[in-house]
Length: 131
Image 1 (cartoon, rainbow, N blue to C red):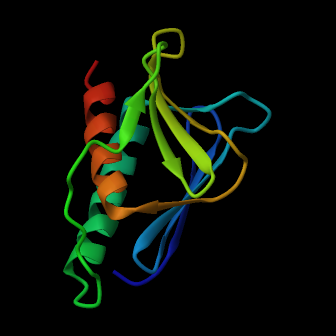
Image 2: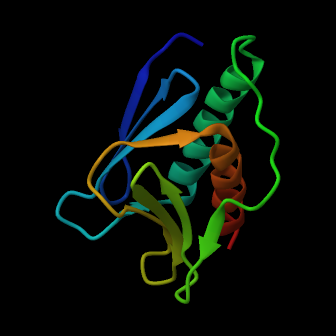
């Protein structure tokens, strides 16, 4: 997979993703909304893309594999899954009102997410998307 920037409009907002060496760079543009909203098919596309990039990173011979020793996310009182990444946070949650997965960045910056976090994000997206 050559290095590309993936950008697509989801139900609410825009998601930009690209591989940044051994991390995944994720930028959310909620377009004046509080969060981005993914439909079931949006979430499936995101899962497929993150899986492809994670596989590419894992199979890169220069990548130094880190042992997964503990859960990297926290669950808040409102059932949001939260990952902290280099001074920012990514929040994922299922919204009954929106009938989809919501994504929010605590800061409007590009998140640089490491591989073990990406694997967890994929798993949580699958869980939330199957509600």
